[in-house]
Structure formats: structure tokens, C-alpha cells
View 1: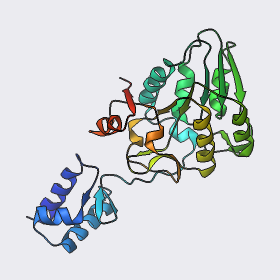
View 2: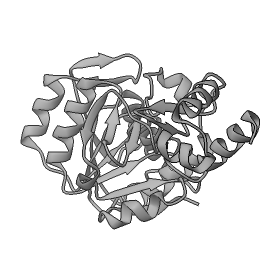
View 3: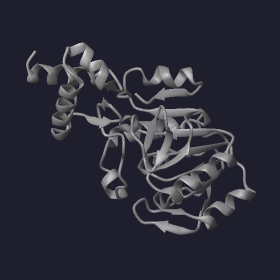
Length: 254
């Protein structure tokens, strides 16, 4: 088998798998581990995979912090559908927390309250969107402004949650990893999100499918602490089954 054929075989394997080890590839292709490592190094330089701890992964699992205006133009239709599906869980005279991110902003655009609705929000764009509806009572969390997400973080934000309780939390995340859990790119935001989860009876993660297999800098929680994930139809093959095996409900916004 030529080098080009090996490269094609490796990339094909990663279309259906989360990872594959150097040792397994060595056996499958009947070449030495040294040869496989050279193949993986070349493929990584070409941007076709990511090397980690003696194995290859289809994508770089680490996600970077990006400004909200850049994120707003990504997966726009998927986020709109996720927002509509998530809004359908808002009930009559409900009390909810909305965290930060562009997907929860899509949720805010889709909310049509039944009578009164009470919302605590960390996101300035969410608050501005919901402020147009006089049937929504809003508490905007104070604290430090996180410029990249236009949301508040810190002890001032967290302290408000000590005195309130909610039926559900709508949480946007930067990464959903089966081993590491749900993550964000900011440690202050992760701390606030943890506090939000303790204040809510149910945690609903709203995330487009690009977040699967990714990790942010700061861990929010293990996957088992999430009740429901709402995502789009491009969710990685097998991911839904893995989540449901852990007792996490998954809804796909068609």
C-alpha cells in the first residue's frame, strides 16, 4: 500500500469514528508505528485530522474564544430551529434562566410567553431582545462584562442566584465531549453556569452539532448533569445513542 493509499484509508476511518490509535492503524495497515506517526503528522499539517495521546481524531477538540459577532453568522438556520424547539418548553407563568451565547439568543427571538414569564439573563443581547415584550419580567445579572460574549460574569452575577429558583436553565456551550463533559472558553462563565445549574430544576443545553467532540478551556459539568440537549440534524453519527444511554434526552430540531 502506498503512502497516499494509507492516508486515504486513515481519513476514511475517521469519517465514522471519534478516534483511532497508532497501534490499531499499524496492525490494520501492516506497517510500523513509526510509519503511522509520520502519516498522521503529514495529515495533521494538511488539516485533515488532529493527533492526541497516540491516536488520531477527526477534528481539533479544543475550541477558541471568539467574539459574538463572528459566532452570530455561523449555523444561522440551525440555531433558529434549535431556538424554536427550545422555546416550546416555556410554560405558562414560567421562571427560567438564560445563559449566554448565540444559540440562546436565537431562543430569545423565538419566545412567545403564555401570560407572564420571568427571566434571569446573563446575556445583554438576550435581555434587549426580550425587553420588547411587556409580558416578560427580566432580571439582568450584573457584574463584570465579558466583551466577547456580551454577557456578565463574576461574584455579583452569582450572588443573585442564591435567592432564586427556576424551572429550567437554557445553557449554551462551546463544547460537548463524551469524556470531559460540557465546557466553555471562560473560567468565570463556567463558574456562573455551575451556579445556574444548581438554581434550576432542569438543565437544557442548546447547541448546534459543531459543538460535539469539542472542548473549551473551562469545564461546566459532566454530561450526566444535563437533562436535555437540543441540537440540529447534523449531530455526529452515534452521538445521540451514546447520550441517551447516559440518560440524557436528545431532541433534533428539524
